[in-house]
Length: 147
Image (cartoon, rainbow, N blue to C red; front, side):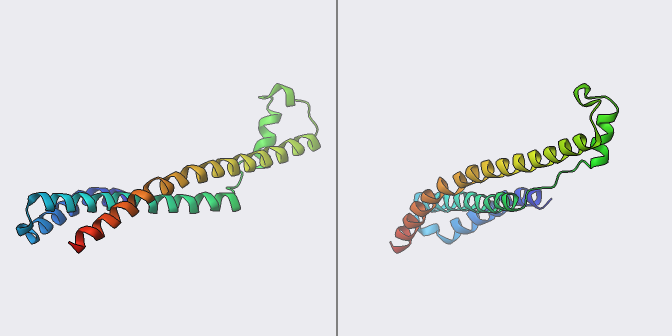
């Protein structure tokens, strides 16, 4: 909901910013205004990518520390096995079914941790790639401001 509103009003905010910036810097020439606007748009886009990557890293780290729970209860697991939907487990004892359930829970948690580690690595790309671009354009912006 919030992201929908953000992406709906973001172009409007950018257009208002462009008009205000162009009218403020009318005497500098159109090329300088466009160059400044381009610099600010690149800074904004790369900053949003870095912030999004940071949020994603935090969420992946939280999943590594505390993986999501296994949602199927033991009773549901046992009922599926007793109905004979899985032929190899049709005649298992209660202890074997319990052991299989515990193994399924462990496997699910380890799968969630592996997925979180994978997401963490992918999220680093959203920081490592745009951050140097942001730093370069920020230094370029500072040089443009000094002129």
